[in-house]
Length: 347
Image (tube, rainbow, N blue to C red; front, top):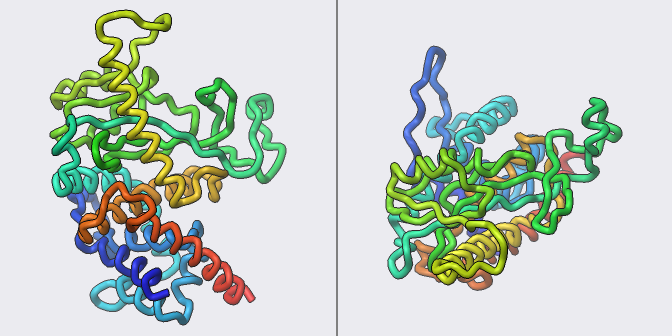
C-alpha cells in the first residue's frame, strides 16, 4: 500500500524538477497568479486516478486519506491559497492548450539526459494510432442532415479507415517516439480521426530534438512542408515508396530494415501507453477537450514514469519490472478507491 501511494506522490513532486518551456508573451490583463506546474500536477492525479471531470478531481482530492493529505500540499501555491473550482476549470483548459509544447520540451530534455541514440542511429518514428470514440457512431448521412440521433454519440469525433480499410469512428493521436534502445515520446497531438497526417506532421516537426537525423514514417505522413522543415533541421524523411510489390530495386533491403525499425519502435510505444492507461477499448471521455486531456495527459505521465525510472537507474524498456507497471497497477487500485470516494461525496 505504501509503495503504491508513494509512487503517485513521487510523480506529482517530480513535476517540480522537470524543465518548463518559456511562457509566451502576454498581452494586456492581469498576469496568472498560479504557476502552470500546479496544473500539470493535477493532470498527473487525474490520469492515474482516471478522473475526467474537475468535480471528480476535487471530490477525490478532498478525501480524508493520508495520500490526499500529502497531495493537497503540492497543489497549493507558496502562499497556501486554495484554488476555486472555476480556477481549476479555466487554468486546466489553458494549460491543456500548451501541453503539446510541454511534451516536446520534456522529450528533448529526456533525450539529452538519457542519450537514447548512443548505440543506435539518431532516428525517430512517427505514427497516428487511433482510439475508438465513446459509445455510438455518427453516420455520414445523419451528419449531412445536421442531426445527432442519440445523446450517447460524440459529435466531435470523426470517421477514418483502419489498416484493413474498415471504416471506424474514432480519434487520432499523432505520436513521435525515438527509434532506438528506448521508446521515448518526443511529440504528440490529439485530433479527430479525419485530420490528415501530412498536415499534422509539420507541426510536430517543430518539437523534434536537433540531434535527430532520420524520421521514419508512413506514406501518409510525407508532404512538401514536412520535407522542407526537416531538411532545414538536417533531418531526412524516410517513408515507403509505394508502387507494385514485390519491389526489386537496389534499396529494397535498406527500406525493409527501416520499416522494421519503425514498426518495432512505434508499436511497442503505443502498446505500452495503451496498456497502462487502458487505451485498447473506447476512450472514457467525450468531446475534443476532454479526449485531448486524456490522450496528452497519458503521454505526459508516461514521460514522467520514464524520468522516474531513469532516476532510479531502472531499465527504461522494462514494461513489467519498471515504474510503468507500477503506475498501471496503482491506477487500477486507485480507480476503485476513487469510485468509492465519489459515491460517499455524492451521497
